Length: 191
View 1 (cartoon, rainbow, N blue to C red):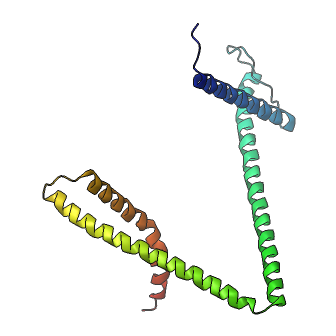
View 2 (tube, helix red, strand yellow; view 1 turned 180 degrees about the vertical axis):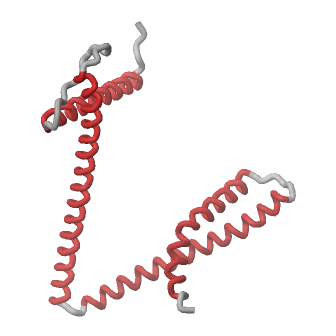
């Protein structure tokens, strides 16, 4: 027989592991449905020709098992979200304690905090301004390239990449523009 390549063997082992995990989760969900009660939850018989009531209940128990499985997953997601919220709250309170203690020990530390915040804001504004300047230059170049295409000239690979990049940047700006327009539109409501 032909020997499989190592990557094919690994892929086969992974898919076999997936099948084992799926069958294991199916067995677990079937057991959890059977132990919860609420009716006759017998497993389906192996003969497909039998039309006994237990066979028709087998389909229902499978559906019940799926619902139970999704309910358990939903509970786990909610529990994880609650734990993350509690952890974030604890971190916030601890940080607030540390900062309050630092302020009580030396109130002049507020001046350092102000300078740090001011430097961070300056850096951010400079970064955004540089980005918009570069974006404006790309827009001007793209406008020229678009006119060139309309006249029938061919674009080089570099020019085409610039045009594609600028177009994608324009499309990315659309969702973020709402975060800028909506707050300023509320200011203009009285007028």
